[in-house]
Structures are given as C-alpha cells and as structure tokens.
Amino acid sequence: MSSSYILRKGHASLGDLTNGYAAQGLGIGNVYRVCASGEAYYNDFVADHGGTYRDGSEVVHTTIASALAATVECRNDYVIVQPKNADYDITTALAMDKKAVHLICPAGLGYPVGAPNSCRIEQTGAYQIITITDAAVEIAGFYFKNYATKGGIIFGAGSYSSNIHHNRFAMVVSGSTNEPFIGPLIASTGVDYGAYSTVHHNEIVSTTGASATIASLIRAESPATSVTVSYNYLGMGDTNNTATVGIMNQSVKGITSYNDFYAFQTANGAGVFTHCVHINAAGVAYGNKGNVADGILMAGGTDNLSFIENYNSSGDGGALDDQQ
Image (cartoon, rainbow, N blue to C red; front, side):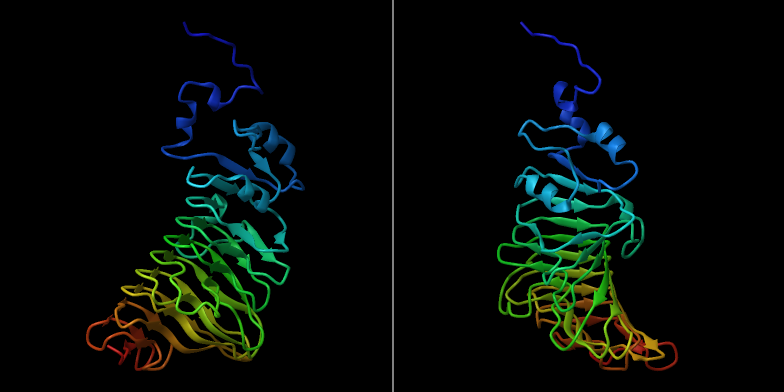
C-alpha cells in the first residue's frame, strides 16, 4: 500500500516526485550551481535553487572548487557557474579528477569561437588554471587568464576523451619557458595524456607579455591517439611574442583541421609563429589558415598524404602552403 504526503513550497524537490530527477534531463546526475556571494541576486538565487541532495551535498556553492569537490565520478554531474562582475580569482589549480564531470558557464556560450567575459577565471597563484587527471570531462564557456608561465588547462596522467570547447584564454607569457594553454606540461614527453580528446572552438590570444616564447599553445604528445584539434583561433601579438609551434599535435592518427592563426602586426613588434602546426607522420591537417610566410604554416606529417588545402598569406590574398 503506497503512502502519500503533502509537498510544501520551500521543502519539496524534484527528488520527492516519482522519477522527478528525470526532469533535469536524460542521464544528468547532480547539478551544482556556483554563484558568488557578493552578487546582488545571491540570496534570491539560493532561495530559488538551493537545497541538499540525498548524498548530503549542497546544491549551491560560492566557489568553483567546492562545487567540483561535491561531484561524484561517473554520475554525470554538472557544475554550472553563474556570471560575476569581478573575476573568480583562484590561488591553486582547479582539479577535474573525476570521470564524466562537466564544468560549464552557459552565459559564456553563444560565440561561434571563444567566449565572452561573462565568467572570468583568473589564476593569481603560481599554478595552472585547471588540471585534468580523469576521463570524459567537459569544460566550456569560460574566459581564462593564466598566471605567467604556468599555462591553462593541463592534461595529466589518467586524462583522456576530454571535451574542451568555446573558451577564451587571455594569454599571459613571460620569458622563454611558458607552459601550454591546453595539453600536457612541457616536461611530460612521450605520454598519452589527453588521448582521444577534442579541443575545438577555443580562442587563445596573447594579451600580456613582451619578447616571450611559448613552445606550443595547444599540445599533444605521442603515443596519445586520436586527439582532434579543430576550429580554434590562435593569435600571437604584442611586442615580439613568439610561439615556436601554435598546435603541436603529435598524437597518432591525430586530426588538426580548420584552425586559424593570427600573427598580429602591432606597432610595437609583430607576433610570430615559427610554425603554426606540427603533426605526427600518422596525422592529418586540413583547411588551416595563417597570415604567415610560405613554409611556416605546416610541419611534420607525411608529404603528399597528410595535408589538404592549408593556406598561408604569401602572394596576393594567400596561397597553398608548400608543405602539402
């Protein structure tokens, strides 16, 4: 015999209804909300969205780190971040160390490439912005500002099949040893970190720094397999900042396609790409473009097999790059 009870405003939740959690969407686990306590609407937001899940975790958090800590591996949890007038300043790396967790700012979505500054995350400590050490995570909709030389979203051991898309990186570089903005650390050579991941529709543009060098903006090592890097905007400018390689995709059977490279010709000195793309002999690169000289756009690969319709800015309006 079934029992019945009265659902009261301010006390009932979707979980109190039969199959109520299905209203959150097919397959979605817990949804954690991040709202800065200083926002004018914070109290109303907590009243509207606050509560406690059956595992004891709170729905609303004031920091991204605490919301990520509340997630559970493989439950397909979402951390949804609200806009903030100021930056979300962090002093250590955010840890995405649980499989199938999503970190998203919906207000930062909508641009075809990159993200507006609805949610700015600035690293103020000498750390990376985010470290990934598990599989199938998603990061989207953020404006990131890194700590000089420390890099952005860093793949570590155990990371694979990540989905990194529609973010903007305001690049801060200094000196000659700058870590990548997406990928494993420079010291992590010969590793499969980030295998099977897709990095797409991100914008990475130099913002602060002068006469600095970065080895690569986006990076994948061999023996990682099938890393796809596509539809990204990458720009070097300011005073003679140089990317040795824009996208270093050394993954086996990697795809590097439809990325645009911008060597900005500023009044104080041009931004430089020594090469825009460098791929594995088993990789492919289609449809990439950059305002660089002939022979600079592409490197690596297998001649006459790896490259299709990659254009540099030589000649009148551009030409096929000679690495074809």
